[in-house]
Length: 394
Image (cartoon, rainbow, N blue to C red):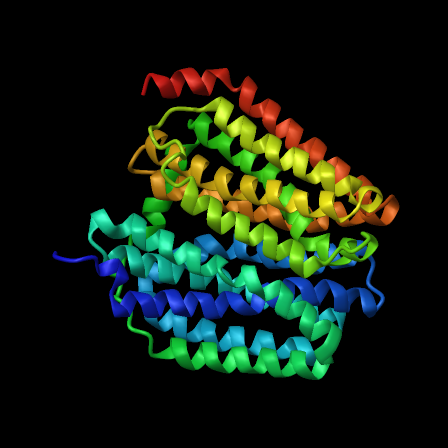
């Protein structure tokens, strides 16, 4: 096939749909913790509400892959756009219980949405363009987090709940109408998908590199989840701290880092302990600076955003690239799906497990514990000599 199909109009529409779909969440990640706190929620309750999103996404992701394999992405996409619209409309008209229900609905929708679009992109593109298509999809899902937090702060401080209501209803309608007729290649139905997944899971039981990467990503994701969940509340305790500015800096660093370092991310199937360990140290130093920000001020606070953004940008693609080389081809997709599920679980636990620490002690203490977890992740990388030797001989 001639030309770069990943940049043709049908695929650009898919990327635009991804941008619209995740725009609401970029706003909700700031508004929901602030509104929950104003309604009397504790940090533990905020953590559970926010964590329910990724936990549900993790739980439904394998089922989503099976149903899309069986029925194709188009009918699944149309149903989930309706459910997602209902979830967005639920936020302005409900209290804490409604927030939990809406987060769960969004988690289900995100599991199906991401699987449907990625499988549609992969199935429609030639092999040599698939990585570019998936990378562009990932980039467009993250673009809303650059400006979304600032919009959310503007809605919260100046627009009030009326502006928030209009924004959620507008995003629900625009995303639903735009996505309902978006062109998508029909994935070939597969009745044997469940049997194939069970066989692959049996093969994965002996894959130590997958276990190491999954535990490492789980640990790091707890740190990332704690940052994203509680920054809107913690920023109010930092002199001149602004949650929207912090999240914008962090998101910008992620986008820029993935562009600037895309060719430097190891992609040779070897276990690069020094590189991965350095990335984990960025996360450790960033969260340690966060724990000191209340006393040391905004320079330290925003410096933490840069370091954590770099860690978040580099760790995930490095580990995924490593797994694509080390896992057997027959179980690679299921193995990477398991790895992604561990990342989702870690983000959810960052809210659910760290919220009680913030309640019992303080945000500073909670972020200090997060820094300790990142140090543990660094030690895991450097001590993983057996995986390094095994991979080097692959």
